[in-house]
Image (cartoon, rainbow, N blue to C red; front, top):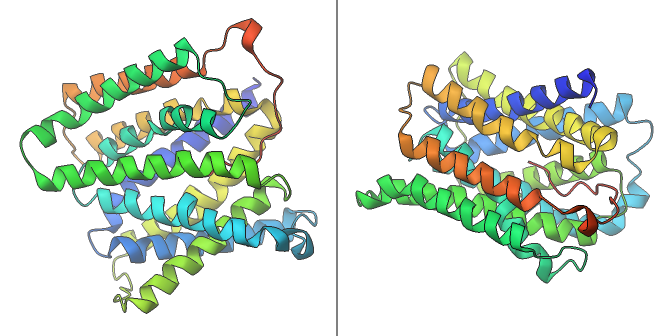
Length: 308
């Protein structure tokens, strides 16, 4: 991989890793659902701006119209719901803990994919990776659950549900979204997510807090424009340049960035369970990615199913 693509990968991991810290900052003033509403709105506007000025005619409504139902589902379950669950979980657990738990999403994909995608085969390496990763999850959450802290348990559950939502919709997207260009897919998912979020806010009459603190505005803008719009552009650029396997290395950078920021900026406590559990989860992900040379299938074009 070239130095330029390594730089893109590190920047992408930094953008996603810092997002967890910004969420922790913002939810001290505004509710999770409103923060996610701002995030999806700013993210949609950022990608729309990119498509208008640099998209080279990629956004063609006649071509995307047949997929609107699919993207309505993906906007809800691949963007809106997991964004909300991640944000809500940080009301109860550390930002770094949420990031580490989200890194288990590839393990859940490995479990789900063989039932729906014929090209995905289960192997002993994948089974071992899943077991190692789930052991890491158990070690990670045991201190909070073991103390009987219902808040901690709710936070863990929300983060793991977000990981499951990403895994399930990733498999669904690989079957259903072979048409529009990947950046257009990301834009449509953010657009639909914004519609779902603001619709839910209106129907449930949630109070819409307008941030009074500059830092809260900075968090919302960072999450939307950098943590979503720019991150997706970098993500799909890497997929096109180096492929899915090398792009997946970002899964190792993101929790590392989140842990560093959580400890040094948010004064979160780093426990040995977090270190061991996180290493086991990432080790499990690495095992599930291993394929003997004779078992490797030809690479497929990315279809934009790994949007976070």
